Length: 314
Image (cartoon, rainbow, N blue to C red):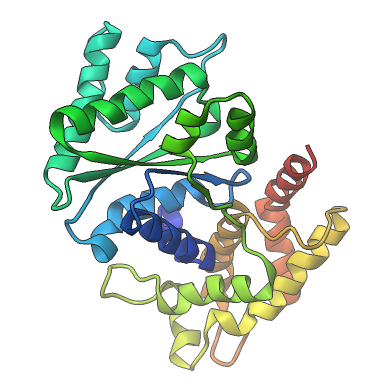
């Protein structure tokens, strides 16, 4: 099946490019830890996945890169559950029950990645990092110190999470927990949604130019609209119309302007347009505004924008 039908592709948006550039800058400038806060569904997790899978393009074999996720536990996260969740999110599940054994496996995974790197450095992306508390940070400090002391491997921690992550550094400084701040919060980069027509146009253009299946095959637009494509059609030529109908839908839903668009809302709508509207285009045709309105209703993509707006005000 096509990646659009499976919804398994990653959009190389302006936000993603900025995220990559910031992370590469942190890694090359020896920052030991940084925060990436952002609202839900704007593409943070996809950005991490993209970086992990493609870091050789920008960093070669100079560093190792891994990713893990902190999971929520009602009543708090125990040490054993913490290490177990991290291992499972790294595709290294274990049946070992003792926290010490699970910690040893986690350290081993980092040693494995760092020891193969030319600079003996491992980059650890940690998603849902807003769930980390003082005790869990202290556990990670122990791992950080052990990797350097015993294996001479340096760690870079990039903590990705919800907007409340942005205030963690100032809170810990006020509480005198400067060791945690110095290890994990040297810098902050707020991850942004699609903002304005410029970001939107760049994202739509990806379907014409940068997203292909297979890698050397037709663009996504060409695949779904072969007849229109042969006559010179590109999806970006309808970008203004799509953007305008989304703006109207936001207004009709009582949503404020200027918040941008979540990546989940964007791809949900665009997948529908690609699969259901583009195949009907003939030579010389463009998308009908009424069809775009129907696509917005059919996909219920405004629900993601409504949730983002609600989170932005809480």
